[in-house]
View 1 (cartoon, rainbow, N blue to C red):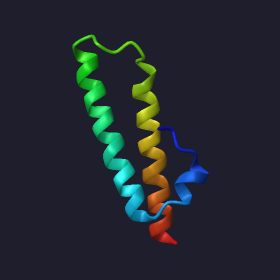
View 2 (view 1 turned 90 degrees about the vertical axis):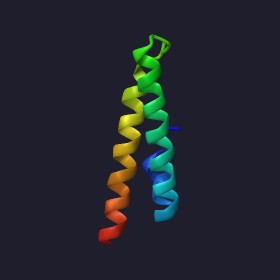
View 3 (view 1 turned 180 degrees about the vertical axis):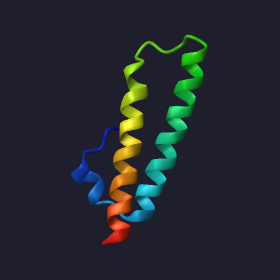
Length: 65
C-alpha cells in the first residue's frame, strides 16, 4: 500500500476510513502469520503501522478543518 501523504489528502473521509480498516486487517493477518513463522519480511509490520498512523493523522486534520 504505502500511500503518500499527498495521495491520502486527496481521499474523502469515507475512503480514508476504508483504507484504515483494510490496513488494520492486513496488519492483523501479518501478525498472525508472524507468530507461526510464515513471514519473511518483518519490516512490513512497521510499514503498516506507520501507514495507519498517517491515515489517522490526516483523518483528524480533515475533521478539525
